[in-house]
Length: 149
Image 1: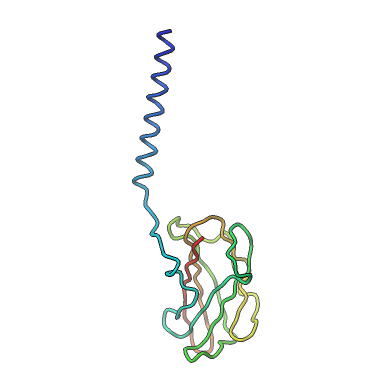
Image 2 (image 1 turned 180 degrees about the horizontal axis):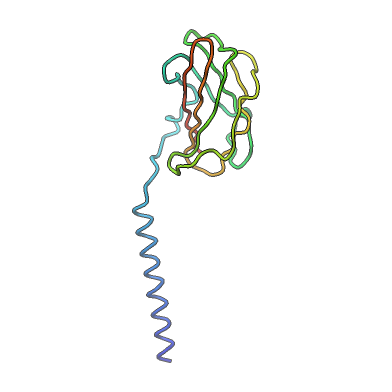
Protein backbone atom coordinates (compact mmCIF):
# COMPACT_ATOMS: atom_id res chain seq x y z
CA UNK A 1 0.00 0.00 0.00
CA UNK A 2 2.86 2.36 0.81
CA UNK A 3 4.38 1.87 -2.67
CA UNK A 4 1.03 2.79 -4.27
CA UNK A 5 1.06 6.10 -2.40
CA UNK A 6 4.60 6.77 -3.65
CA UNK A 7 3.45 6.30 -7.25
CA UNK A 8 0.44 8.57 -6.69
CA UNK A 9 2.61 11.28 -5.12
CA UNK A 10 5.23 10.92 -7.86
CA UNK A 11 2.49 11.24 -10.51
CA UNK A 12 1.07 14.34 -8.82
CA UNK A 13 4.55 15.84 -8.59
CA UNK A 14 5.19 15.18 -12.27
CA UNK A 15 1.82 16.71 -13.22
CA UNK A 16 2.60 19.81 -11.13
CA UNK A 17 6.02 20.12 -12.77
CA UNK A 18 4.51 19.88 -16.27
CA UNK A 19 1.82 22.43 -15.39
CA UNK A 20 4.54 24.81 -14.16
CA UNK A 21 6.57 24.41 -17.34
CA UNK A 22 3.51 25.01 -19.55
CA UNK A 23 2.57 28.09 -17.52
CA UNK A 24 6.11 29.48 -17.85
CA UNK A 25 6.12 28.92 -21.61
CA UNK A 26 2.69 30.52 -22.03
CA UNK A 27 3.52 33.54 -19.89
CA UNK A 28 6.86 34.23 -21.60
CA UNK A 29 5.76 33.61 -25.21
CA UNK A 30 5.72 36.74 -27.38
CA UNK A 31 2.22 38.08 -27.79
CA UNK A 32 0.99 39.35 -31.13
CA UNK A 33 -0.19 42.93 -30.99
CA UNK A 34 -3.95 43.10 -30.95
CA UNK A 35 -5.44 45.35 -33.59
CA UNK A 36 -8.86 46.85 -33.50
CA UNK A 37 -11.06 46.08 -36.48
CA UNK A 38 -11.00 49.82 -37.24
CA UNK A 39 -7.21 49.58 -37.78
CA UNK A 40 -7.62 46.96 -40.52
CA UNK A 41 -8.03 49.34 -43.45
CA UNK A 42 -9.45 48.02 -46.71
CA UNK A 43 -8.50 51.16 -48.62
CA UNK A 44 -5.27 53.15 -48.36
CA UNK A 45 -2.64 55.08 -50.27
CA UNK A 46 0.34 53.17 -51.55
CA UNK A 47 3.74 53.66 -49.88
CA UNK A 48 4.88 56.52 -52.18
CA UNK A 49 1.38 57.91 -52.69
CA UNK A 50 1.09 57.10 -56.40
CA UNK A 51 -2.17 55.15 -56.07
CA UNK A 52 -5.13 54.58 -53.79
CA UNK A 53 -5.67 50.84 -53.35
CA UNK A 54 -8.71 48.97 -52.05
CA UNK A 55 -8.71 45.27 -51.20
CA UNK A 56 -11.68 43.04 -50.40
CA UNK A 57 -12.80 39.41 -50.73
CA UNK A 58 -14.75 38.89 -53.96
CA UNK A 59 -17.60 37.15 -52.12
CA UNK A 60 -17.55 39.68 -49.26
CA UNK A 61 -16.54 37.16 -46.58
CA UNK A 62 -13.06 36.10 -45.47
CA UNK A 63 -12.91 32.30 -45.33
CA UNK A 64 -10.24 30.32 -43.52
CA UNK A 65 -8.83 27.18 -45.18
CA UNK A 66 -10.35 27.78 -48.64
CA UNK A 67 -8.88 29.11 -51.85
CA UNK A 68 -10.60 32.35 -52.62
CA UNK A 69 -10.50 35.33 -54.94
CA UNK A 70 -10.05 38.90 -53.80
CA UNK A 71 -10.43 42.20 -55.64
CA UNK A 72 -7.71 44.86 -55.72
CA UNK A 73 -8.94 48.20 -57.02
CA UNK A 74 -6.37 50.80 -58.00
CA UNK A 75 -7.15 54.47 -58.58
CA UNK A 76 -5.01 57.53 -59.08
CA UNK A 77 -5.15 60.25 -56.43
CA UNK A 78 -7.58 62.06 -58.72
CA UNK A 79 -9.86 58.99 -58.70
CA UNK A 80 -9.14 57.72 -62.22
CA UNK A 81 -8.90 53.93 -62.63
CA UNK A 82 -5.40 52.51 -63.06
CA UNK A 83 -5.38 50.30 -66.14
CA UNK A 84 -2.70 47.94 -67.42
CA UNK A 85 -0.98 47.50 -64.05
CA UNK A 86 1.47 44.66 -63.44
CA UNK A 87 0.87 43.31 -59.92
CA UNK A 88 2.91 40.84 -57.89
CA UNK A 89 1.74 39.50 -54.52
CA UNK A 90 3.56 38.12 -51.50
CA UNK A 91 2.87 38.00 -47.79
CA UNK A 92 2.38 35.81 -44.77
CA UNK A 93 1.97 35.89 -41.00
CA UNK A 94 4.54 38.29 -39.51
CA UNK A 95 4.15 37.01 -35.92
CA UNK A 96 4.65 33.39 -37.04
CA UNK A 97 7.40 34.33 -39.49
CA UNK A 98 6.03 32.27 -42.37
CA UNK A 99 4.76 33.10 -45.82
CA UNK A 100 1.53 32.38 -47.60
CA UNK A 101 0.67 28.73 -48.24
CA UNK A 102 -0.19 29.60 -51.85
CA UNK A 103 1.12 31.91 -54.58
CA UNK A 104 -1.66 34.41 -55.29
CA UNK A 105 -1.70 35.91 -58.78
CA UNK A 106 -3.43 38.82 -60.46
CA UNK A 107 -5.46 36.85 -62.99
CA UNK A 108 -7.64 39.40 -64.68
CA UNK A 109 -8.57 43.02 -65.18
CA UNK A 110 -12.29 43.55 -64.51
CA UNK A 111 -12.46 47.20 -65.55
CA UNK A 112 -12.65 50.46 -63.58
CA UNK A 113 -9.22 49.78 -62.00
CA UNK A 114 -10.33 46.45 -60.48
CA UNK A 115 -8.07 43.38 -60.65
CA UNK A 116 -8.98 39.83 -59.57
CA UNK A 117 -6.43 38.19 -57.26
CA UNK A 118 -6.81 34.39 -57.30
CA UNK A 119 -5.19 31.81 -55.06
CA UNK A 120 -5.50 33.55 -51.69
CA UNK A 121 -5.66 31.08 -48.78
CA UNK A 122 -5.45 31.66 -45.04
CA UNK A 123 -4.75 28.44 -43.16
CA UNK A 124 -5.17 29.69 -39.57
CA UNK A 125 -6.59 32.53 -37.57
CA UNK A 126 -4.40 35.50 -36.74
CA UNK A 127 -2.90 38.49 -38.50
CA UNK A 128 -1.92 38.01 -42.14
CA UNK A 129 -0.29 40.59 -44.40
CA UNK A 130 -0.54 40.78 -48.18
CA UNK A 131 2.11 42.82 -50.00
CA UNK A 132 1.38 44.17 -53.47
CA UNK A 133 4.03 45.51 -55.83
CA UNK A 134 2.33 47.59 -58.51
CA UNK A 135 3.81 48.88 -61.77
CA UNK A 136 1.72 51.10 -64.02
CA UNK A 137 2.14 54.09 -66.34
CA UNK A 138 2.36 56.46 -63.32
CA UNK A 139 5.28 54.47 -61.85
CA UNK A 140 5.95 51.68 -59.36
CA UNK A 141 4.70 51.54 -55.80
CA UNK A 142 3.77 49.09 -53.05
CA UNK A 143 0.99 48.62 -50.54
CA UNK A 144 0.51 46.23 -47.63
CA UNK A 145 -2.90 45.12 -46.40
CA UNK A 146 -3.53 43.49 -43.02
CA UNK A 147 -6.12 40.71 -42.88
CA UNK A 148 -7.24 39.59 -39.42
CA UNK A 149 -8.97 36.24 -39.08
